[in-house]
Image (cartoon, rainbow, N blue to C red; front, side, top):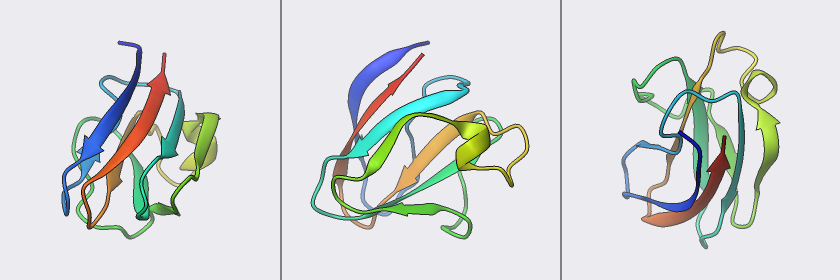
Length: 94
């Protein structure tokens, strides 16, 4: 299901940015703290930040293909974000 919204991350918890399987995603870290982003296969959240991409405040991706963002995760179709602080992330995907 497509969405264009702001997702609030719970501090210290992996939060799913996508609400269904996707192939491309746009997101931006709109907070004042960094976050980590990871791609997964299915709805199982990552267990650590190993292999995750760090995004500082204001950083993000524009219509990025999950195959380009997470080439080492074959079949990645969900995106999760993690921050030690509660932050907001703008998310848009089809």
